[in-house]
Image (cartoon, rainbow, N blue to C red; front, side, top):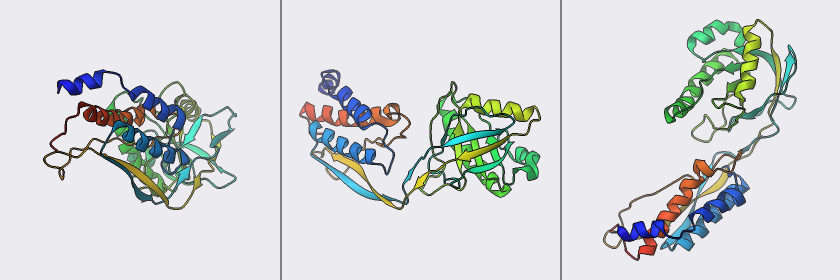
Length: 282
């Protein structure tokens, strides 16, 4: 253990490895050319770390996806600029966009949809959110969306605008489907302050009409790769201790926190173990 700690605290390529991933590869969405470059980065870094074996294992995603030039035009009561991004794996709108009344569904509860009634049919819905501050808040955001989407589909809504859980115009992306299929409705995440402005118009009794243009690009199945590296155990080489991190990221940033730092740390852990000259039992 002292040798492992000493190697971990000594000179390390960790920071440079992370810089290459985040600055040179950048955001790396599954199915994108950047993701292929990220796989090459990981294979090279593991080899440099001295592992016994590193390989890329292929798998297939059901479809590929990328965002087009998403925009939201406020037609009534008065136009103003809107900041938004598509939800990941959301279907595109028609080429000319989707023009509809905006209907506020609050938190998206059954009672909220009951209050909206027939006005939700064909409408673009505005769903409110609390500011995200904790990990619990983040996972609640993920878990509540599918229930609201189900209600929106049953109501006949045309699309959903999600109020961002981040302040100061910060935009981010996630997806609401877990198995790689296309979502059921066009959806976008709107800058919190812009969504609140829309909500204030509606609360004041104003009619709000908008046009959502979201020309997302959807492709067929795409072959992808996971990177697997091994340091074989000296006594039980057929048993495993697994360290892992997801390599992909959304492309709105460089994917440093989610999840580049942890991908680089997995490689660093392999380097440190190899540098001790000691073989783990398994």
